[in-house]
Amino acid sequence: AAFASKLSCLRRALREALPGPDDIPWLQVAVTACGVGASGQGGGRRFPGLAAVRQALLEVPADEGCGVVDARGLALSPRDGVHLTTQAQLLLGPRLAEAMAALVGGGGG
Image (tube, rainbow, N blue to C red):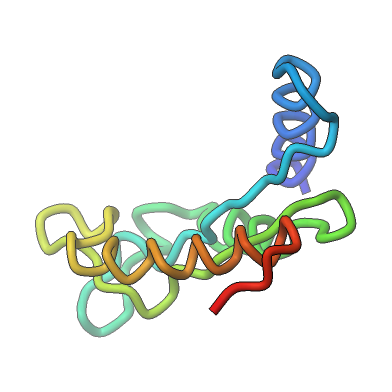
């Protein structure tokens, strides 16, 4: 609940600080199971708050001009197990573009 509240405050503060309309679209990526091995285990030890953060990111309020793209299933770097691989980023890009188009009423696809 604390992360969700802080995220909401961040969105509000950015929208107030930026020139233009108050309803600037907000799009975020829901983090995946960072720090896990191929078995899917280990993320909880490295990042104990990951589940709560991920849940807060997934529950972004659509009625406030917000959208979310889930990164689950995208490959993580074998170097750190946190960041997406280049290939995964290339897959994420079109998903973000489609989500933004839908958010601003441009349809998508």
